[in-house]
Image 1 (tube, rainbow, N blue to C red):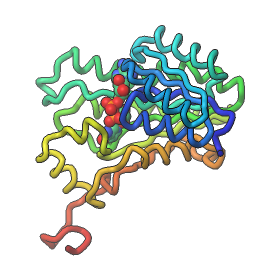
Image 2 (spheres, helix red, strand yellow):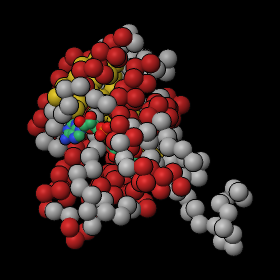
Image 3 (cartoon, protein in one colour):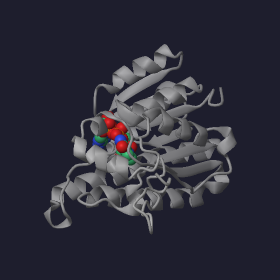
Image 4 (tube, rainbow, N blue to C red):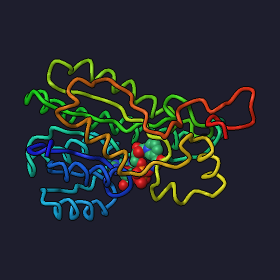
Length: 260
Ligand SMILES: NC(=O)c1ccc[n+]([C@@H]2O[C@H](COP(=O)([O-])OP(=O)(O)OC[C@H]3O[C@@H](n4cnc5c(N)ncnc54)[C@H](O)[C@@H]3O)[C@@H](O)[C@H]2O)c1
């Protein structure tokens, strides 16, 4: 098991992609601390323990620096020094055009999706640096590069995470710490399953493989980036979107790119 002896902190692991990541890291040998607002994080911790690993769930708001610091300290005290950080918690707080985006919605998305990730990096990177080993993975989105109409706050924060990733990678490259961004397309989480059928169909049509990703597929990539074989990957932005980041326009044909 390539993550034996590691302690991971996964934010937003009460459900969805974060829960899949927490369970995958545990299956690969890591003990797992969860920081989430949602008390259902305890259920993920129970599932981690059932895999034979240690787990602790801390209820905290990552947009608050003090709560974040305390949560990270509690996890390190219970499970040992944190060597893996997965910044997964994220929200879509408002679906509105630029002009209709409220100040509150904009600030809330920046606070959770971007400042939250910064708060967690700041809380753990010193300890990783002392140990001379660390893995940080930031869950961004294809929206970071392609934008997303009616979600200006979300796409701006996901693009901001790329800048955070690059700078942390540069500052800590010689301390044995890597920092990478993963950019998922549509993933079959509770939220995505609950979307109106017409939106799901439009998103499916823009996805060359014609299906959405599974949380376990995102988790497998994250686990690889957290392992010893990924030591030479840092500052990378890795798409995991079934080709959804590609241009699907087909010139000179009404058929799709596969010729059908
Ligand atoms: N589902 C997708 O299709 C998709 C696609 C691209 C990127 N992503 C990204 O992947 C990540 C996980 O997505 P998901 O669909 O599993 O989301 P989700 O909404 O199912 O889970 C997010 C978790 O984050 C927690 N959270 C929210 N605000 C928090 C805060 N202030 N402090 C602590 N925890 C907080 C929530 O309680 C929840 O448990 C997000 O960053 C999302 O933007 C998702």
